[in-house]
Amino acid sequence: MKILVAEDDFISRTVLQEILSPFGLVHLAGDGQEAVAAYARSLVTREPYDLVCLDIMMPRLDGQEALKQIRALEHTQGIGGSDMVKILMITALDDPKNIMAALVKGSCDGYLVKPIKRARLLAELRKLGLIQE
Image 1 (cartoon, rainbow, N blue to C red):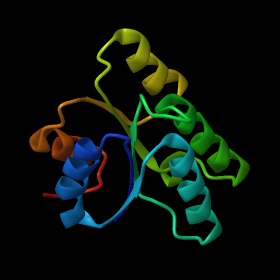
Image 2: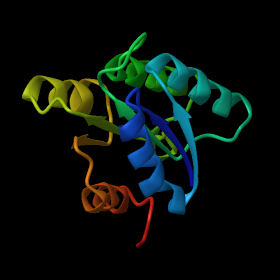
Image 3: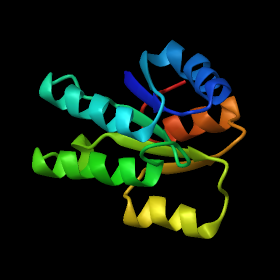
Image 4: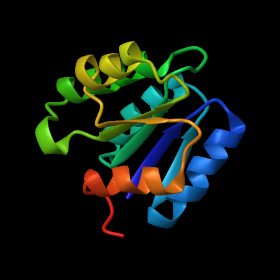
């Protein structure tokens, strides 16, 4: 599995990398702008990501906007349905407005609230069919 983690907080980024690395190659981005650029590159090289984890509150480009831009890139490439990358929003924001914006308007596949717990993250990956563990 090829994974992209976009997280500006070093500790959160490291925790996600440690949890996810047994399941595949993990690339890191420090903000949403880097994440969108990495995702665009993955489409050009025909080596797309299977999973993108986006923090909502990031500098330069927040996770909600990065989510919209990633979905727009997929749309322009004719990628839809089950071929779309699975996107998990990971954030400290546990309010209904952000949850609805990510799940409904942004078409993300899941939403996890920090602090990230290994069991909860792995349960989400199982639900998305990304791991069997």
